Length: 150
Image (cartoon, rainbow, N blue to C red; front, side):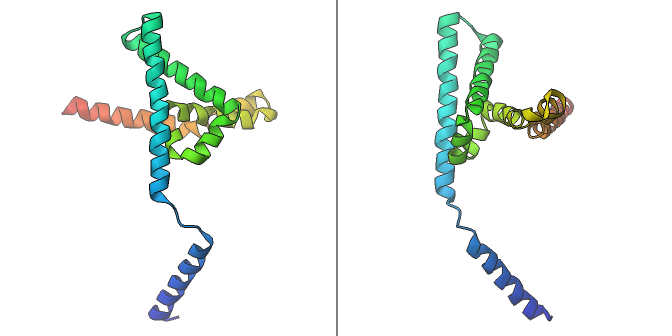
């Protein structure tokens, strides 16, 4: 096959493959992600205000309590199957906040609980979240070292 024929063959193949894939609606997806992610953050801010006023929490204690509450809500909604429906419609808007991390830990744990506590629940719990933790720690260390030497 010559270079010109190969180029036409590649273009035809790409057109054939794209005919099965519906076009992505980028603006609509970004808008949904923005709205849902913003709504989750608004819920977090409301929890922050409630904890500040009702319990008198401030500073690090307030930040920790809000994070714990959001992780609990994300895990609870995952357990009831609600967070998966939110994720299907919101995309990255449901993944980026801390509730998305809770979902990424709880989903495999729920899925593999039938395989037992050790080989199912414990072993599979961090299948999705494990790389996030590893690369998060590495990125944090790299930024800390850069900050230290600058």
